[in-house]
Image 1 (cartoon, rainbow, N blue to C red):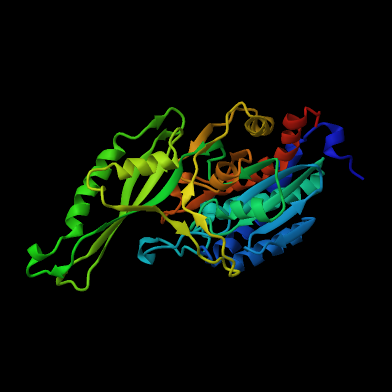
Image 2: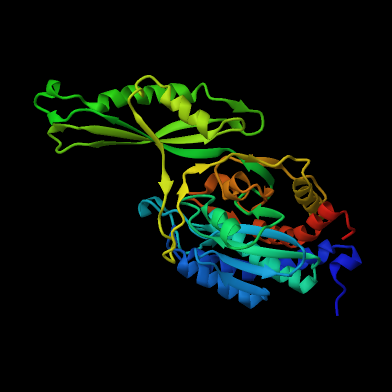
Amino acid sequence: MNTPATETGTLNRERLAALAQQYEPDIVRFLRDLIAIPAESCQEGPVIVRIRQEMEKVGFDEVRIDPMGNILGRIGSGKTVIMMDSHTDTVGVGDPKEWAWDPYQGKVEDGYIYGRGSCDQRGGMASMVYAGKLIKELDLTGDYTLYVVGSVQEEDCDGLPWLYILKEDGIRPDCVVITEPSKLGIYRGHRGRMEIEVHLRGRSCHASAPERGENPIYKMARVVQEVEALNGRLHADAFLGKGSIAVTQIRSLSPSLCAVPGACSIHLDRRLTAGETKENALAEVKALPGCEDAEIEILTYDTPSYTGFRYPMEKYYPTWVLEESDPLAQAAIQTFRSLWDRAPVVDKWTFSTNGVGSMGLMGVPTIGFGPGEEEVAHSVVERIPIRHLVEAAQFYAAFPLMYLKQKTGLHV
């Protein structure tokens, strides 16, 4: 019987690297299987089934699917609870003519796997599942419980699955690792965001005599210019960068194309940097010239998951930053150093992740480390380096023991 790693006090990184490399074909095959299953938000059922098959095949201690449809694979039953997340939904493909290859084929070429979801975010899942196999085979166990989570509905409403998991699934982890693409860097936060709508009313009339009515589109055009100006004067943070606001949609309500509309609305994407709050962001919009009589609201997400489960959430996704001195950040940095004898890049994401739920809303210390390049997410050239998949599996397998060391001071 192997001696647990917590007793030997050593991590044989050469053996870990060799075994991870040995499983490269299996990781690639699994990821290609996942890419081949189209699963946008609220349609994740088939990909959840495929993940369950692989978790059971590699030897997870328990695999379950919660009422929302998130899959949770468990390894170990120790005191310290570590959770790792990969969302299982993807965005759509858009215009298929933009793609130079079948987005669901999982093309392998020049050391990359191409396709929708390869980078965002199924690569993280493939690496995590095989990290579980590495933990089992190398006995990298200890006084911890590891949950590998495949979450749902992230692309529609980031943070929602983790709000549900942490409030309803009866698990309170010591930390969460988000596996969104980070180029194998340690990412310790990102800006928050809000979805805001501004509604203006006018007075409808026949378009042949527009002077009889009041066109809200003209009023809204002035508001749009003020939003553009507001973007230039928003607060900046040394680490996260500047807050931003952008008009992403304009709609009007008219009885006919031959009529002046009676109402006009704009959708605002508001990115919140450190120091900005929901209340301040709303107040800034309300104070814009032209918004004196506007109705301004934060939207609510209330779409059922693929299981038919509803869990409404306000579309406010808080900013979060983990200090680099935090034990969790230090554990991630030391895990990287122990594997590759160099310092990792420590940075932040430009986009938003489920960290807005785990840490932003629920206060659970959260860190990011993922295979793939953020820049190609949601693009028609989405891809992931195969090398990243193998190295990420090593990191996820080694991290739990390093986190125990940082958290408890034990020699592991």
